[in-house]
Length: 410
Image (tube, rainbow, N blue to C red; front, side, top):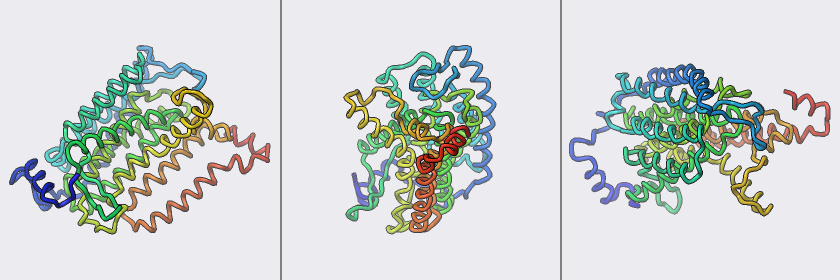
């Protein structure tokens, strides 16, 4: 790793972008295309919504149906393959973005958006195979690595990191470090979304919330960098994903008419990884100042927002199963959402509670680019207190049997 602004970095940039290819900010500045972003997101939502009905019929005919198992929450056979409908919406919206004059320049200076279509199509196809016939864990993992490698090959990779420890500041990753970090984070986020997809509407809602947070953050980056088109990819990728999740959610919220399956959860994970990765690279420290640690770290914090709920759930599961003398990968009904159901929350309330927790972290991280991090931190702390109280309501009121009965039926 080399420090930002060092001779090594200068030589690297010069070799990658010969003289005349690196445009000044004044040449790249194209404004903040809010209307176009809204149009692209709305397109993804509408197309996904209508495509989902068609995919539901197709999945039923192909036999891609999830039958209830002992550890499942759903009680009726439900078709899968919802990721196919989401991908149709994503691909159509990215195609539209490539044709809009206000967004076209973002495709000229970055391959981020085409990379998402290609890598997203690959990981969605792997998920479709798993939804219909099932894949072993190793094969699925190899497919995830391959899709993440496509992102890297097409230019989507973590190139810089801001480390606020020991005066390190902004560092530029060498090629090996960049590839390894990108692969690790992408596969981690893909598996995190796959892991958390255990309740109706949960993965789609978390994808919507986190993608919206990344979009808000990207709009802030565009504002602070004079509309630099290098920040178009994270804005477009995130708003397209948010639209696809929004269009799918009415079909997937409790009681779900269709599941997104691995084809959907892995697609969401890959797009979240791509959006946060493309947001991190072009950030200029001079636009914020060395003291604005949170703004510089926000792309990484947004990744944390995606990972923290499933990571916590996975950690607790490993500890629980190991103590019981079982394999850490053996299934059970003691996941976080199962526990919330057991203490008295209804299915919908559990989903909304997890939305709340992830929203606090994701939107809090994104808002640091607009507001003083100290004020944002205070608001987040207050929101966390509220979330804790709301989460514990059934336990706090457990002594009132009448209340519990009414609460459970809602």
